[in-house]
Image (cartoon, rainbow, N blue to C red; front, side, top):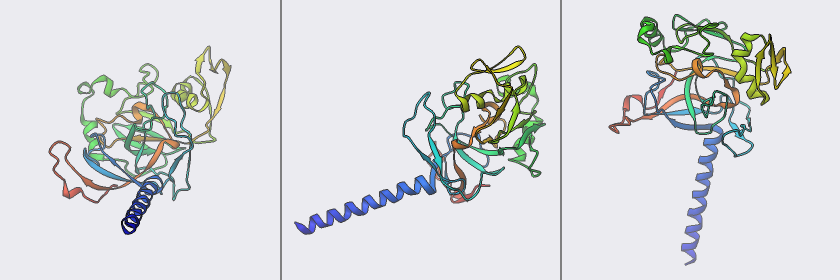
Length: 288
């Protein structure tokens, strides 16, 4: 009897240690996600299991496990190896987690996209090709961008063609021609004219918790004049490689740095979600 109890205790102890190790690995080092959509085709396809490296940007640690509508994210980030860079494929929480036209955190609303702009960059789309003022190299999948450039506007649904800030009269931005748009960096100051109020309203309201309006030639935050604003946090601009079919920053706007989960490094394995056939050619494939 004692031998059986000893064996059960040993088995339970080993099981608890393995579970604790697995949990710590997921929290601090690496996690796995399943690709559910075609937005990153051909880099990532539906059914890919992607490994997300949390050591690069530093693991995000929650201060409070309380999530839901109107509850702000409370977290801090462990020291990382480096910052997220342009052309990194990143997993992050969608900036409009509850689709209410404002930046909100939703723990299980996760996207995987490519980084087009980092804090302090100016990003744009010129004839369907991504541009960054501080990054002279090609960004994303050029073949997909070429296909979008060759597609007449008349063949694209207006809701798909139009891009933020959805002001056709004063901006007229589309997914084919967009920007230039400054990506907010902590400490940077902007004058709040009508243009910047339109572009950065979600960011300012997210950081302050107030309501921003532009009326009678001036910006008002909760009714108080606000001629200049200093950003408190860093933000990023992410887009899908499948530029014709990707819900990303061209529609949703900026992603707060605290929403970033990690950088995608490899596909662990891939499985067709309909046939359950495993795609052996994609196993342990490096994501670039």
